[in-house]
Image 1 (cartoon, rainbow, N blue to C red):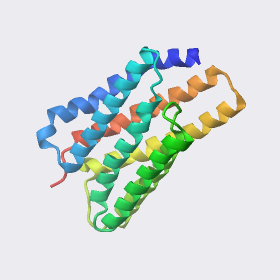
Image 2: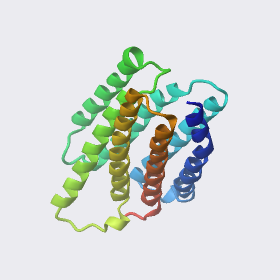
Image 3: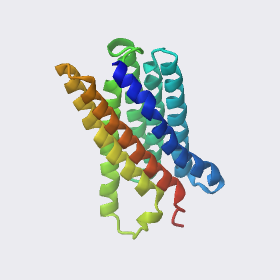
Length: 219
């Protein structure tokens, strides 16, 4: 585990370097961002604060896993708000409200009784990943069914949704592999390879965040 922690400490700087790109774009263009883009900017801020706090606690030798118990539900609510706005004509608000309440209830119960604050909340992450994937697939399905011609390269939601689908599909598989490796008692070298993939997926996601914030929405 010491080798794994050393790897994370050495390469977490790549995450901060990449996340600064959408953050900088969001700050420069904030006045010109539309409603959905500002929500993306909030997601970036939440991720930055989360990782900064987690890194600080890790460097002090303090268990930082409780941070992710807060990060996952907070991010989920903002992302769900985006899809709620996008699907407002096809999915009722009651459905999204039910999903929000149900997920929050599950996250709280998981943290209290199944995976306490000093344990990695893989259950909550897995459930949220499945929901993200379903929402992103639904969005692409709606695009295919739509009759209006959209300039997708100028559509922030297209870039965000693509990043969401790639990232959460990849990390869902990654967490399955992590649990499998842990069950086999494999070496830290394998764990490092898996966490390297996690960093790669984070970089990809933040690139799509940057694209979603950079483009000027079609009028």
